[in-house]
Amino acid sequence: MKKISTPLLALAISLTLSGCAKSYLVLMEDHDGSTGKVMFKDASGETLIDQAGYAAVLSDAKNIFKPEQQQIESDFNRALSSEPTRPDIFLLYFNNGGTVLTEESAALIPKIFDAAAAHPAADISVIGHTDTVGDAEKNEKLANERAIQVSHLLEQTTLDVKELVVTSHGEKNLLVKTADEVAEPKNRRVEVTIR
Image 1 (tube, helix red, strand yellow):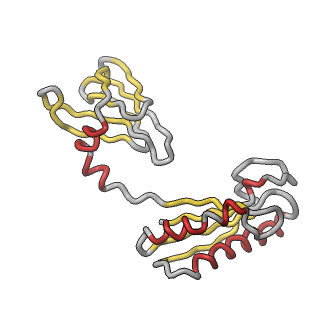
Image 2 (cartoon, helix red, strand yellow):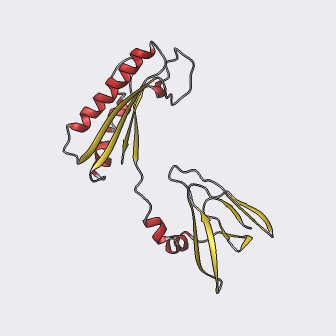
Image 3 (tube, one colour):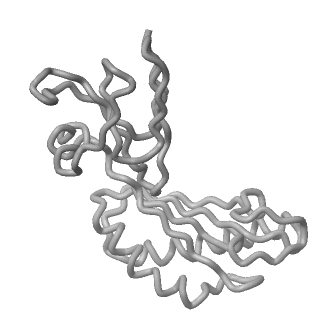
């Protein structure tokens, strides 16, 4: 019996390889640039594929090869074209203790508008966060104020927005894990997700 452990993005297809009908599976890079793993087990043994772009013939776990990118796109065109549109995710950072965006984050606002414009009837999630400095209840309110501020920027445009959801996580979901009372700049953020 053949066992296949499937990563987030692996594609399998039946086609003719070297003149005979064969099925193969190719491991693809995930959208975030990471690559999972595929383990094949059959009577001939066990083979692990852990590099994007490598493939294995399903009837022979030891038959590993690397098809050309053009071949992968041709063989898996239907599967690749049916993949859902990936969300756009932006992290906006804030200066310490308030609702003022850093200069770098303020410069991202036009890119957020462009991304939202590319999604017809966009669903947008805006989640506010803080670092661990200060009272947790006050941080919950501050994170909410940050998220509301960003949502107001989005509401002032002519974008086709189906739904805009604003929430606050306060200091509960740290991007960088820290102890209490640590002023970590990457934790003072708003996450904007556009679907």
